[in-house]
Length: 305
Image 1 (cartoon, one colour):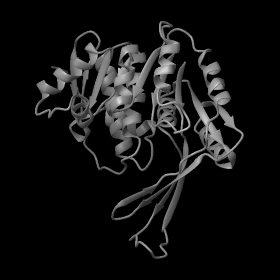
Image 2 (tube, one colour):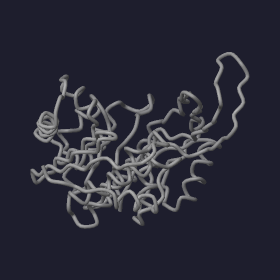
Image 3 (cartoon, one colour):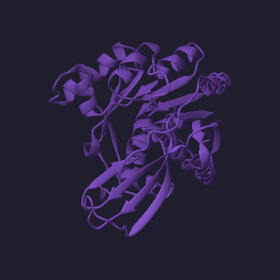
Image 4 (tube, helix red, strand yellow):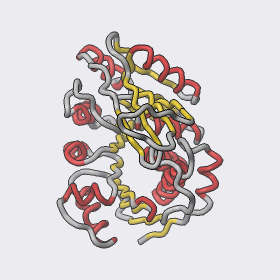
């Protein structure tokens, strides 16, 4: 089973405006509402690739009820902790000539609900996969990723971490199965300027030396490079298409990587399907459908460096 955790989910309320004017009454010409959260995004793509997945996390109030309703319509299991107080946040995204976001703060998560989450994690079994992604609410300990990985260490569970900076550095000793920094984040981790492919591979291997098993470096429109646990380096050029969406592409890549790896246990296939899912979401108004993923997949070719 593949589990994802979304600590701070939201309802994303998207409004399309012709021109946003500060201090004035603005009217949208179109609205959409989606459940937001990196873990939810991963589970959605996994479900569309016909893989079983369960979403873990926290929800509260009527907004939490709507999140659960929307997720169930996407066809995967939810085992979310229901908070007694507060509301799951609403994030407002205005799309016009520029994109503006106003993100809610979210509810407080008491210790007893965190304990409830850990009880659920205790049910994971050997060879299960757990995806940790996204921001940590202020009411949770800032080392919650480390706590989870320490608790599950030596149990044969593959843990994927999509995080940045100190959050990522601190989990490396627990040997995450996959980490996914982009080019800029890799530079920030080592406080260097990466000028070429050789430098990028060098620093990706540095992350392996610090504990990561596989390192997937996203290069945006230029594709992605994977440094795998068996010391192979693979490159997949970016897919061609019209960019429609800046949200969820990285989460889609993580989901595709998992699906590709489980398909044949081959890392070149994991990179190819991961790249296809990331590109397909970038070329869609929302998270990619299976038909778009297959269309993009046919474009791609993976080469070993």
